[in-house]
Image (cartoon, rainbow, N blue to C red; front, top):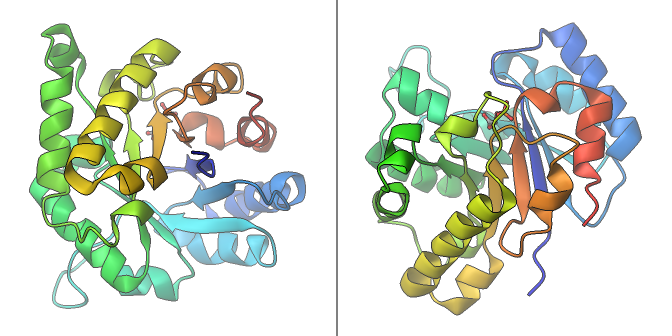
Amino acid sequence: MTRRPIIAGNWKMYMLTGPAKELAAALAKQVGRLADRDVVLVPPFTALAAVKEAIAGTNLALGAQNGHAKNEGAFTGEVSMAMLVDAGCRYVVIGHSERRQFFGETNAGCREKIKAAFAAGLTPIYCFGELLAEREAGKTFEVVRRQLEEGLAELDPALAPRLVIAYEPVWAIGTGKTASPAQAQEVHAFIRDWLREHFGAATADALRLQYGGSVKPDNVDELMACPDVDGALVGGASLKADGFARIVQFRS
Ligand code: PGA
């Protein structure tokens, strides 16, 4: 089974509109014509319009870093999935570890957001992973299983193959400590087994699993060579055009 690779750049809370436009334009030039992989730029909300314009007519796609589960309503400061579609997004990141750590997001909350994203026509990128203390206590699989069970509890099996999952061990995010290819593959294989058990072989074979956590130009090749690693969710290294372009053009 060959899955179409998917590389996403999560810009986090970086990039005013000027630099965002420049970065997107540089990437559009360097990797905007690739037809054999999905490349997603995930700027902050305020730069969505600028990036949308800069990547118009290319194969690059736009994503958002978060979205609310409700369609609309009195939720000051929030942005709905329909609004993200309206802004040109095709993807939305859900449950990033920073949202869990600093904004109290839970697996149950992610479940609602995943449903809302699909209902709006977006592709959710559901993120999760274990903390360092959990890994050291030998609880990685237990934690990941709960994140799968709770986050995907009400997922429509017909939509499941379209979901993207990003396994991001929290200890590897923004730390420069990448999981080894063996560590990444081990958890990805566990996730795919879980998917097979709950959604069947066809879904498990089709669903794409990204690895995230200090992915860089010099480690992307070995990570992408893992049989169950189908892509990368890249933070820090997605903020420089040359480096991200190299990551997108991984060799494996
Ligand atoms: P990093 O971030 O690449 O800077 O470790 C990854 C992420 O937060 O998705």
